[in-house]
Image 1 (tube, protein in one colour):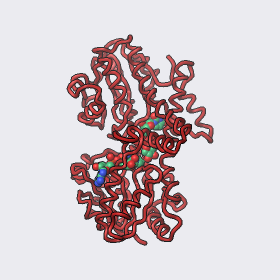
Image 2: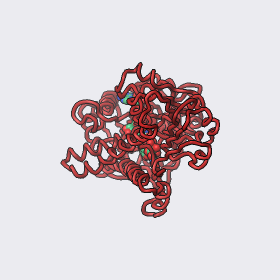
Image 3: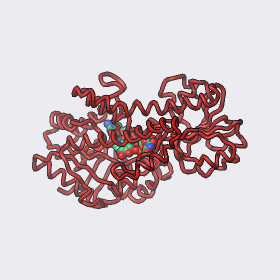
Image 4: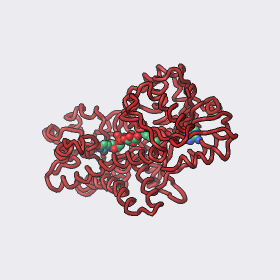
Length: 466
Ligand code: NAD
Ligand code: UDX
């Protein structure tokens, strides 16, 4: 079966970049990305490519090449579903904030709405692809909705989880370590659907890197991959605390263990804590699934990864307070970085939010600079916590467009995101304009301790004892 038209529901951090690359590599396929968020779609259609809704290196060039050729962005969800041979569901699956499983389970309401809309609209057989990260066995719920509310047409459900990381999405999509496709391997129709998706990816991904499995393995592999990655960060962060007590240096420890080929060198950077929309949500979901099967030891094991991450964020802000003579009340503390990692404008679950909230509880005044995060987003992130009123957040925290202004007169600078530009700042100039003693709390191990100490800073790094 040859796919000629694709619809992708959800024009977010996954739907937008993924469909841009498929469109680039498959000019023979017409792709329409749809979303209920009209302003997001308008931004994807903006003539000024710098106003695309997400910032992702190299993405603008790809969008420029394919938009209007075989990639379209629209709010007309029904029409795009109707026209498509294959429908990707790429909507958000956040942690539930209400009812059973609140704070743990994935909220599948957006997925169900998609399934119902597909069922209502479809007049021909369709292949439905789960691109969103979903709890294992969600495909059976989607199938049940489609089969029971549809117009009698046949649906095949595939699971094709996305492994891109933000900030490197384009390169990850162009050269994926693997593409995973789960489907109904027990029927001929299932095999045909799997092969239709394999054929799309084989336009640029070597066949041996396209892995096909049953649906449940595919769904569970995505949760497993994120749990393992997050576990590495929590493991190295746990060691960073021991380093600070013992005089060992976490960078030396990371290098020493990373050279063991069984461990590998990636994902061993100690930090102020992992953020992003996926790790915490997916682990909590895994914990919830394990508990729902009565697997309490399994659940406890994985939950500890999230508990350790909370601890890492809290101890970072605690260290700032205790180092600044046990009071930050009225003191200006500058945050360099607000995004959850460099090269993205995404702030979901960013460690900066929790660290700021903790310091604001201590009545610090915070000044934030991030190269890509707009002012309104910083305030929305803080307001969402509901710790204090929106007007209090506005009066205690300011957002600066200029990093040097942000640092002026502050008692301490805190590095929350590893943006490259921070490394080449005029640190001598910054030092001159700060209160003394001038402190730096480097939550990313980004800056050069020796150079900064030479200037006069008191420098604290995660995982290095002073
Ligand atoms: P996102 O919030 O950036 O985008 C989701 C979009 O779906 C939103 O624009 C929303 O308006 C839209 N939407 C929701 N319900 C809709 C509906 N019924 N009809 C039309 N549009 C609808 O989310 P994201 O970061 O792109 O993540 C999407 C999925 O991919 C999640 O399941 C996530 O876990 C998974 N994932 C994310 C990443 C990542 O790096 N962000 C990586 C891999 C997998
Ligand atoms: C993650 C997964 O890597 C990706 O495969 C999945 O598809 C989505 O979730 P993402 O959240 O975009 O991607 O970024 P990632 O690079 O994994 O970083 C997540 C968080 O961990 C960031 O806050 C990052 O700063 C932190 N991190 C990562 C560390 O603190 N140390 C590390 O060594 C690596």
